Every structure is written in C-alpha cells, then in structure tokens.
Amino acid sequence: MKLSYTLKTAFSGIRANTSRSLLTILGIVIGITAIMLVMSVGKGGQELILNQVRGLGSRTIIIEPGKEPSGPSDFAELFTDSLKDKEVKALQNPNNVQGISILAPNVNSVAVVASNEETIRTSIIGTAPALATIFQMIPEEGNMLSDEDVRQRAAVVVLGAKAKEKLFGDSDALGEKVKVKNKVFRVIGVLAAKGNAAGFNIDDLVIMPYTTAQEYLFGGDHYNSIIVQAKDEAGVDRAARDIKSTLRDLHDISDPKDDDFHVMTQADAVERVGLITSILTALLTSVAAISLVVGGIGIMNIMLVSVTERTREIGLRKAIGATEKNILQQFLLEAVFLTGVGGLFGILLGALLSLLVAFVLGYVLALDWVYVFPLSAVVLGLGVSTIIGLLFGLYPARQAAKKNPIESLRYE
Image (cartoon, rainbow, N blue to C red; front, top):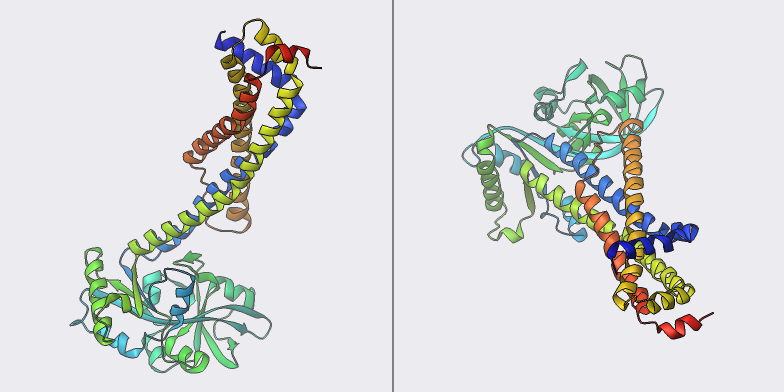
C-alpha cells in the first residue's frame, strides 16, 4: 500500500474528530510554549547580565572577601572581613602588584535616606574617587568625591539621577542636606543618568567616601570589595596573578583552596555568569518539559480511544489487504502529525509571548533587555514534539496493528 494513501487515511481520521484533535494537542502546545518562553527569556536575561558585566571594562579586576562561591553555602563567605587597609596598602605597592593604574576600596549596604520632603530606601556605596573613573560616572551637577573628602572623612554625598529625583524632585539638590542613619550629609554632586553597570544601578546610588561610610554608618574596618583597573588589557592576567600572590603571602596561605578572597576579571565574570544562567535555564526548561510528558500521555489515551472506536475500520482495511505495517504507519502518522502541529503552534505562541515579555521588560520597566529567540529553541521544539508523537503513539499504533480482522469486523 502506498505511503500517500496511508497519509491520506491518517489525515481523514484526524479530520473526522477535529475538536477532539485540537484538545488533544493542547498539552503539547502548552509544553512547547513553556519551553520556548523559558529559553528565550533565559537567553535574554543572560545577555542583560553579561552586558552589565562587560560594563566593568576589560581592564577591571574585582577582589572580594571569602572563597569563590561554588554553592549556596559558600555565599556566607562573602561577608567575611579578609579585606582591610593592610590589604589595600599591599596591593598599592608596585613591588607587589605591577601594572595597576587605579584602585578603589568599597563598602556598600542598603539604608534609608531622607531629605526634608522624601524618604527612600536605596543602595549606599562608600568608595574612592577612582571608582568614578572605572565606571565612567560623570557628574551632571556639582562635583564627584575628592581624595581630600576621603582623608577628612567628609560628610558629603553624590546622588544618582533617580535618587536625586526621588529625594528632591525638580528642585536643586546641590548644597542640600540628606540624613542617613541619623547622620547628616551635604549633597555635592548629582550624576548624569547612566543605568546599570557591573550589577549596580548607578542611577539609584548614594555615594560617599569609604572612610565616612566605615566610621559613621557601618562601624567596621573591612571592605566589601576592592576594584582595580590595570594599565592595559595585556597586563590584566599578570595583575590578577600578582594580586592573588600578594594576598596569599599577607594571609599566610600556601594552598589556593584555603583562599579567604577571590579575584575576578571580566573574562572570569562572563564565563561564570554564562555558566550559571545556562544551568538555570536548563533546569527551568526541564521543569517545563514535564507538561510535555502530560501532553504525551493525553495523546496516547486519545489514540487508544480512537483505536477502539475504529475497530471495524481496521478490520475492513485488513480484510482488503492492509498489512500490520500499514495500520501501524497510519496511527503513528496520526500521532506524529498531532504532536507536530502542537509543536508548531507552541513555537509560534512561545515567540509571541517572549516578544511580549521583552517589550514589558524593555519598554515598560526600562531594562536594557534584548529580545532573543534562539534557533536552537525552534529545532528543540519541533524535535521534542515529534519524538513525543513517536513514543506515545507507538503503543496505540501497535495495538491497532495487532487486531484480528475477523473479530474487528464483528465489533459493534
């Protein structure tokens, strides 16, 4: 029997129960849509984070306390006090670390900031003037922090664009006072709008000298990070090695596994972020794939019902010469066609929903979100839906192919 006739017969069987066929593929549509959405949003999120990491600049090196996190339990290490003034002085010594042009120690936290009219809760960062050079933070009004402010522990702040707007609205903020943890600070500058960079929303920041933040706000002598900029890209790897060697000598560490700090270049950050987001996307995709199993079971159940309802048809076809192979092909084609159509609808719906999510995140929430719908997602959607049809359609097809023609013709 020709394959074309088998295809025609399979499609006729599907058209005979159009409503049931549409309901049958609904589980596949939902499953493929979920997978497409997760992969697209995951890729878009990865690009967003990577763009922020790239905002550090290729010459930037970040030193943080605690061992490099390899699991949830290691994140507590980030709050250790292994970076202090002696570490900063050692890293500033050219005999220890070569090729460094800028070094900025940082302390940061979230706190309530109040003006005369408004109160907000936002990120506070105590830093050195060098950070403005690294992140290219340019004051739109007033001035940035100076080395003199750091030495004198001056009670001054520079506001991000959004922080200024929330605290003072359209009024002039220069020279005005804000209160942080009962300490009054004078506003000396307002940054131009910049957005996110290296995980910081610069527009929401309240920036002050790190010496002031340590003495009046945080009450400690350690740093949450030290950001270093190499003189050129070629010297980044050597500077990172010198930093590790210097800190290990300072902390009497002989085995790198015992490091109480971790050093990260832009290349390291991109690799780590890419790995983490890929793992998260894979996990979410596997969770979404559960609905495909449910859809596949639905396909198998409906196909078994269809086999029972069409018993006399199967008997008649066998009586006029159809082989078990022909019957098997017919019902397998029906199952694969149903799941294939469900896969196509799922891909289209997933693309539309992903576009909607990208629009909401990019335009409504003002994130630097890029719409990404990878070709691999389309291939995966079609491939998975076809495999589901084959796997869950095989058993009903075999049941149909094995039916006895004489008993099938007697079936009522």
